[in-house]
Image 1: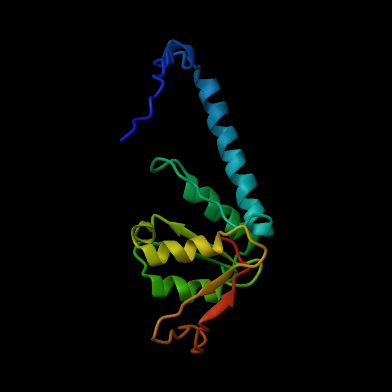
Image 2: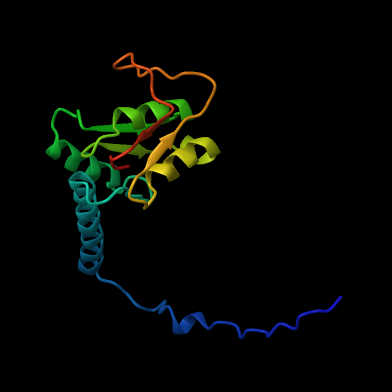
Length: 166
């Protein structure tokens, strides 16, 4: 069996990339954090306007990420009719129903600390379908059972076009 010779890479000197001796003042830190939250606000408004199909926000607990997003959504629709916030556990069947209920343009779904979505392949594939960059996003649920929309009592179709934001 022939072996392919690999060229050994030189180790990277991290001191040239990161200056660990750099100190930020409290004002610089406040400015940097404020700029990041300004970007979060801009991206959230893009979802509200329908200009962004999806927004994924990650960061440590207690920073205000959820608060800022929810504040903007409430400002957009104080009745809460055009958005849904999922906190906690959800199954794939619940996601399909939620996607169907919020399938129209201008509707937004927020998954906030709903980690079960990321540990289930079916749920993850549903989210991938609605975050797709194709012109037409189709959600398909081809299970043997029928799903009933709890709000309207209608049968959720096996496939439907999703035009909302996540």
